[in-house]
Length: 248
Ligand SMILES: [Zn+2]
Image (cartoon, rainbow, N blue to C red; front, side, top):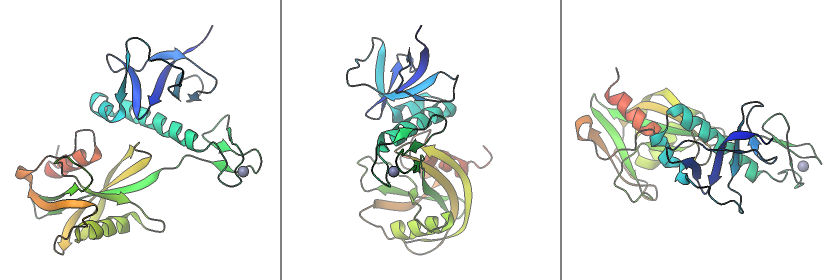
């Protein structure tokens, strides 16, 4: 008898779910990405030949953030990242030979030179900058057509500490110097495989100067006069709420 597994089935940044946004159960295939033995949870890309079964629908992963619990979303996020990693490491990056899936751990192994390729995360700092007791810096991304104002964020560069990345990104994007940079929290973010590391910092000095390719507007907003901010479920939203309501 074939075994049914709870399945994360992906197609173009969308996930197959039923009308209640729950995961379907499907027959397991040999090529599926499996999570710990016995869990009966698999992930795979929608096969070219596979029709979308009756009652199921493809929903953008970003939309599921708002519909699922944090725990459910983190599990899906892990599945999508592992699938993407497997899809991108079919060949050895050292010698070019076709790789094999390691039977026990998340590794793509080269049978010719034995090089192991493991999933990697990209550390990305995101910073909430306050001024005085009741102002926060929010910036509008130049590539985003909406009217949403978010936080300063960027990838950590090779050889840099997290705090240095916070200071550098802020200086580059809005021309400000910071003080009292401190860690808040972190969140895996599967677009494509980032670890968002949240910091809080205080304005120290400088005038706002925009890096125009990245930022179309930035200013300090009073807590009670915020513009449109990132959606609930994003780390930016949680950071803004935490700074405005530190006891909550
Ligand atoms: Zn190799």
